[in-house]
Image (cartoon, rainbow, N blue to C red; front, side, top):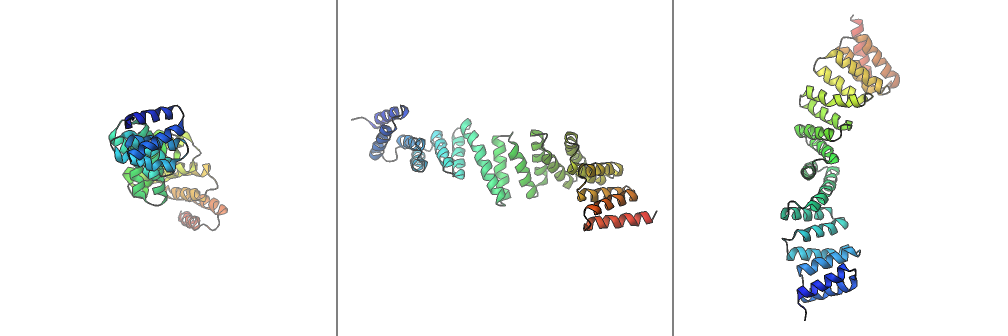
Length: 299
């Protein structure tokens, strides 16, 4: 009578040769004789998964892991089946276990990063920002060049009020893709909130150099220049913003404010009137108009 090891070797030969029916029969007999045998459970699970029976495969792979929890391969393959069944959290846990056992396991790391990112996105969408932030950081630890994870991590940090972290991560996203203007904007916004006005301006300079028609970037520069008391530069930035998006009344509000601060009330009046021609109901533009008229009458 063949030993379990010999029977398993014969079954594996059938499996490799594509004789899956024979292999499945032998794996089944081995498991009847030695329930939960790790090697047979693992190979039976693989065969079932390979023949489109992932749900039936998972209990066998669970048994393999239970029988030999020190096998990185068992955890890896269980994760693949869990992932195929849409059990992303379970798959991630399996691949984390693989990496704990074998830290240099490239396939586990490659599979884990997108699984963690999917979990992070789910957490973010449900409002669990702290969980999302922690998951995004784990993705970046595995894959430091992951642009979507870097940007999304910045948004999670911003939502949590972690402005230093938000600025750092948005800056990372901008370095990974210098054309990603929203990353530049996010970094500038965080740095302005931190009082780091010069660094906020530095974050935006490449954005307007890449795309001078970006009204939002020019509008942010207008505010930042005003923060530094650079009135002339603020007006220039405000004008560029209004030219880039002439129908954006919000930009005209900022331009009027910058011109008012720069003691150019007639120009502020013109900007406010132009905005009101686009949106006669805007309370902000009516306020800007009133302030400009008061300043003109005071001349």
